[in-house]
Amino acid sequence: MVRFLRRAPLILTPLPPPPPEVTEGMVLNQGFLFTLLSTVAAPELSAETLDALRAIDPECWYDGQHMETILNELEDRDPELPKLMGQSIYFMLRPELEKSGITSCVQMIEQLPAFWKFAVRGGRGEFRSTMLGPGAARVEMEQPFNCHFEEGALQGLLDSWEVRDVSITHAPCMRDGARCCVLDVRWSG
Image (cartoon, rainbow, N blue to C red; front, side, top):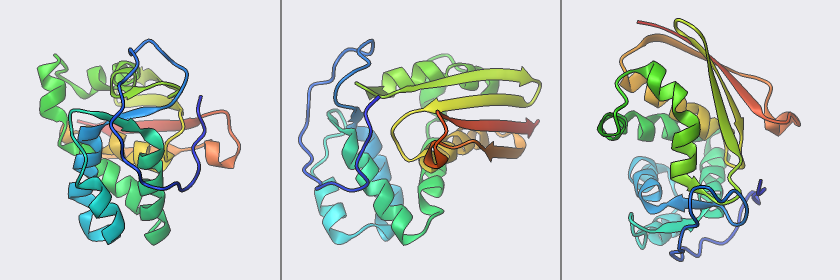
């Protein structure tokens, strides 16, 4: 799995994506995710970052280091922003999931590893998800991106399925030296 720098220059050059089965090399993100981030985070981003994001083609793929740089810019401004941005962006994606046949939050959680392989290419690490019972799941994230953004993304996806009383406990965490981040998730409804 690739490890990102905390910050790097934003030189957003479109790149050809490797096939989903390739799990080594440069980590690539889809341009549409950068586009969504620039929309929901615009008031919090620097003018320089917003200028760089205007050149994004949502249909192309870009070096994932740039996403990490932007998420760290947000985190430096307010530690809660990456989580809030993940929640805001992924809340909007339910219609896309429904197009692929996902009809419940349980199916969504079970499909997280496949979504990760589809949305991120290269040395991306992995997601593992396990249903623990009704309204309970565990998600293990061994991946290079800001884990608070990914936690917020899961919260946003769950919120979009109209479940109630969502609780996510994030421990252990790779930022504290753990092998992977673990999200213990509970909900009702």
